[in-house]
Length: 175
Ligand SMILES: CC(C)(COP(=O)(O)OP(=O)(O)OC[C@H]1O[C@@H](n2cnc3c(N)ncnc32)[C@H](O)[C@@H]1OP(=O)(O)O)[C@@H](O)C(=O)NCCC(=O)NCCS
Figure 1 (cartoon, rainbow, N blue to C red):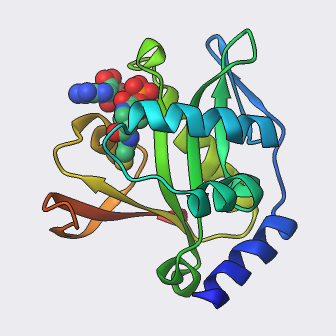
Figure 2: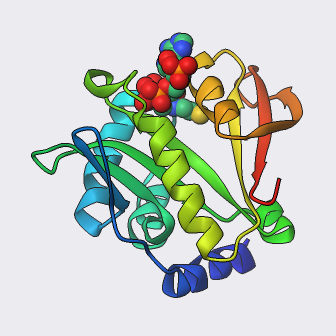
């Protein structure tokens, strides 16, 4: 456990960020401290049923945000986020894990999640990573559709802790 946190901490310092990218009326960029705070507020809105704790917030705000991304609107308000981290499996595979992706309902269906995934993959590849992993509940058609379109492939399916069928996916950059 501590070695995984240590890996994330070191990666946070070494990670090379990328200049932002425009898309429709949105800007995609690496997550700042205030973006992380706003993203956590959106997280609570888009994942109302999910557990939430202080340890996770501290990890997201101080460590994971260095290799996480947001989409902001013209008023510079965060409307979508992609929190990433390195799990043990990722460290072994040379990948990074997309922990949570969310887009406000007011801005969904416009390709924001897909563009965030595309942008982050580009930045991760530039940082020398081999791919991105993700876990998606099979009933989450929107997220699955966006992930598959961007090259994520199902590696395995299993029943998660909530009793739902879930897929573990990886997008390899070299394929
Ligand atoms: C899932 C989520 C991130 C998608 O964000 P988004 O910005 O609306 O996604 P995109 O606009 O990039 O859509 C990607 C594709 O999925 C489709 N799609 C999006 N939501 C959909 C839905 N509920 N049902 C069916 N298809 C959907 C889009 O039409 C698009 O397909 P297309 O490219 O063929 O037109 C967003 O709805 C969300 O935050 N949901 C709640 C949190 C969540 O479930 N996160 C994912 C956990 S893994």
